[in-house]
Length: 478
Image 1 (cartoon, one colour):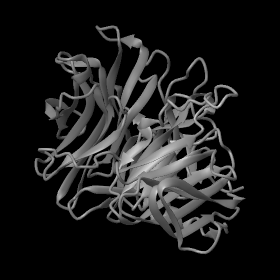
Image 2: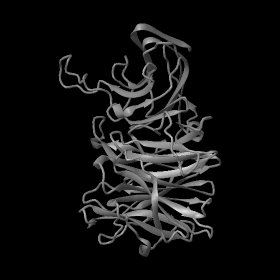
Image 3: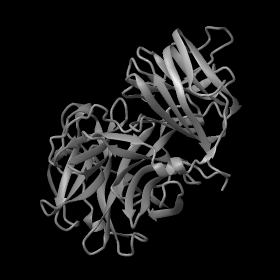
Image 4: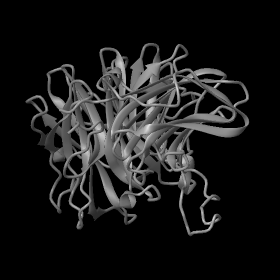
């Protein structure tokens, strides 16, 4: 049996991740999602990895509290190490039975420490604090702590909401400061855009001459985004491509190793394990590596370690040797392999796109003629990558009994630069999970439940695209 690409515990799902690099190894704490009924409390579990391809599950790390304690649910936070070597864990404590004055469960910042290298944690309930006046008491979560050496203090960022103002635009990243990681003083907001419902899982880091702020927004798109500044005081600018991934990849937080920055998030599952199901909270873990462009903006792609873990070639036939030119000025054409692909594979296609081409890309888990498949569609005229599937739904026997008026899932499109010339489209498929990357810059994650097997194909519509390179690889059995 091939080891999975995307980690998921045997007894649940991966929620928000809290990554920490220790001695070259990533300690990936995560909210363990158990969907049983009645729903139990939420703990922090731990999985570790040295190479981003093999993961060791250590089970529960920080236990949630009892039904009467404030941290029946131990939600997202962060970990820092002080000068004496003690690790400090800050987390969100919530209990649905512990209501605030507005009738909403309180969210509280809570503290735990470890003196044995994060193997065990000692909670400090006496350090617990909630939202100050002017903030909603039910939104005071995801404490992210970092050291500000310029001011000789620790700073804590929190996903919060103002208590007044337009209901959908009260979101703010609140801020507290401390000299000792024990006593915290509320201060001015870190970022106050007055734009969205809230900004979850804040994360801030410095890379070269730039500072980056990462957050996951409650909005019409539920997307993880980033902002840039020359100092942690801002002002924060909006890059042209400001999202990390699409709707399926959420709550991403970061960690650094050897000058490289990795984004750890989860790919949401779908209700009923079907393509048409609504997105759920939590899923499987996924890792993207950020690449810093010359102008400071970030591109996102697979880590090299992950790509190199697929080393056995999978031969496919696509009607002749490459390069293969697909020229259809006002039509559509596709080449589909004779072979079905394995459940788990890595594919890389290089497409030379001619000017004025409407679309081209890859078909995944396709039938023999490409009419039933998942689609990774590059649309140069619209400057976007789209994940699609066809047919989207069959409603009856007649030709018109197809949900053709239902568009592709608009949350599964990403803007990208598709100027004429060569572009590289990479994809990793593992069971019901699919992640695509364009030009080591733009990532798009998706779920693929309904089509469980099939072929690979390449297509073009209303224009010309030349497939100059196609490689497909798999992992060998463990």
